[in-house]
Amino acid sequence: MTRASIPSTCRSTIRSGVVLALALTTTIAASPIAHASAPADEAPPADDAAAQRRADGLALYEQANAKYDAGDYPGAVDDFKASFDLLGDTLLLYNIAVCYDRMDEFDAALEYFKRYRAVAPPAEQADVDRRVSSINARKAARTRSTGSNSADATPTTGPTERRPDARGQADTGAGPTTTKVFTPTVLALAGVSVAALGVGLGFGLASSKRSDAADDGCPEVDGVRLCTAQGSDDLDRARQFGVVSAASLAVGGALAIAAIAVLATNATRAKKQRNRGAQTRIFPTPLGVSGRF
Image (tube, rainbow, N blue to C red):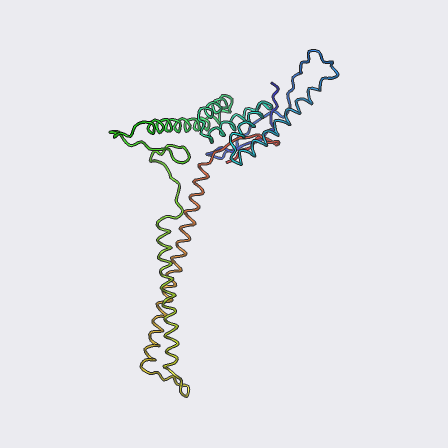
């Protein structure tokens, strides 16, 4: 099979981000095409045939990449395989393995990861080994879970088996978990804030009403404000309610700001954890080989 390699570039590793140079040839190797009885002048030039294979392979790669981004992993696998048949670039084995991993087809993912490891640069073999170990662990966890679900529900004396989480990874009780955005702290701060703001508004309205009543009970005579006993009481209450209202609104506002700050912090942490758990894949492009999280 004629193999067309992709021009040289680099990709980032999942842990360290160290750029690895992937030296790939930029020429297109072409082998002569045998024709049993066709005249020589009817056979297409070897270079043109190889160039067409390379163009078709890259077009299939672009199509596979679009399907992967859309979540159509089975379709991406088919196109990546067809691209590999035309280009012969072993980096596509990694893409195929990642697609199978996303579909939880562990045996197929292991097959292609092992095929890629056999030709991978030494600097990338540790990453492939880590992925193979992760798949083996999830495969074993699924096997145990399937066996447990198919058996009759009977009391056991052993420890309770942990189920795989939503991503298919075994929950061992150790390691970081996804940070919740709406934590009890956020909910408590928000609740107290709403209550304090409500109290502040209530006392503010009461203060306004008392102030209006005080105006009626404390008329001005020759520039001097004379208050009846009720007017003096209304004026004092208006001032007191105003102080309580201002304090409650200040506390409620401060708690609302604190709740927003904690909420933003939790959202940032959750996003970072999702990014750390994302898959990394290598794929060829018309300009070279690049990496994507």
